Image (cartoon, rainbow, N blue to C red; front, side, top):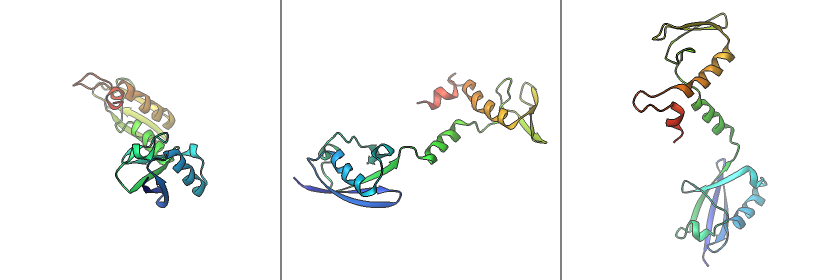
Length: 156
């Protein structure tokens, strides 16, 4: 069976491992793991934009290329988790009573929200309270066109 070169790329560093087309990917990955000294449970592998199923043979994943690029990623990548958390947080300032956009005023470490379309006003909000409210309030935002909540739209 033909030899294939797999270039495992982890944090900008490439390590080449040779494999055979009829070999299981998990066996090739074991050789790579020995070289880098990482725990298999802490990383995952991708090729051509897809997560690699290590239970398959190499020929089932790629039967044509003699060189295959494999991206190695940390499972608990802090940058990914932080970006997901940022995307969950609202970018708009929302009224705590009706959920519509309002103005924010910060004075002496206290927040005041007012001048929404319903003229609601709330004062003396602490920063922690404000952040919690803004995160939780987006669940109730409903699109005027499709009548779905923001979470229903972005869950797809």
